[in-house]
Length: 275
Image (tube, rainbow, N blue to C red; front, side, top):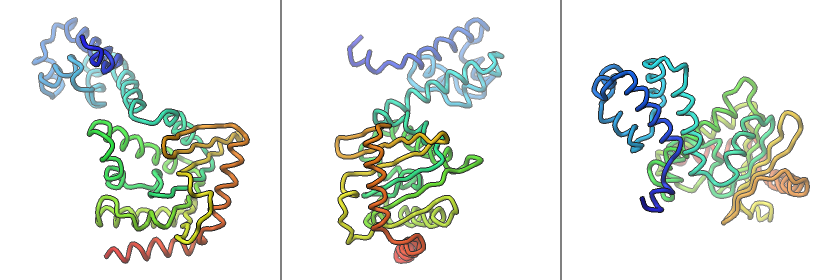
């Protein structure tokens, strides 16, 4: 086997495939018989057993029901999902996403694009498609949607403050239809009581907004975390000096931004201009 093949192996996928094959053969079921019982194709089962295709969640749950394995296959599927997603994310980001889901307060600045927590799926796909293959793209999009759900759809949603550079409202990502839908979503979210959106005008030249996006989190116990992405840089930190630096930078871009009501009017006007 080639070294490239060894690097591409997914041990969790192999474990799932081995367990499936063991359970099927122990039950004296051919792939055809198992496929008939599950309502899928024997070719699909063969590809999963050969580690050519990852299992779907529904397939894992059907296997648990068929073999009475009390959630074994579904637990393995969740591990596969987490592992595969971590491979396409920047180092440190999976840990950040877990902390973000717990945060009571989120403060984020985005210079070039609409922040990830406020993006539509079409906008995400257009934004990431140039640097990701189809499978990695699907994983990253699904992960970003899950981040949104974890932050905004929980019982007590996070209080979130976003400062968006004015240029992001006019940068046509995904075409007019995609931008129209994106700005409509942004308008809706900016009207929510727990989402505060401010627009940083073109004329602002504060240094605080020139070094890439950054996010700071305040957790329920008061712990503060910062995450920064820039050209060739991504950093997750709890170091007090860095936390204070990001707090100052956020206050600076907030101070340079339009008030919330004016920002909402600007977003709405930009949406109207798209027709």
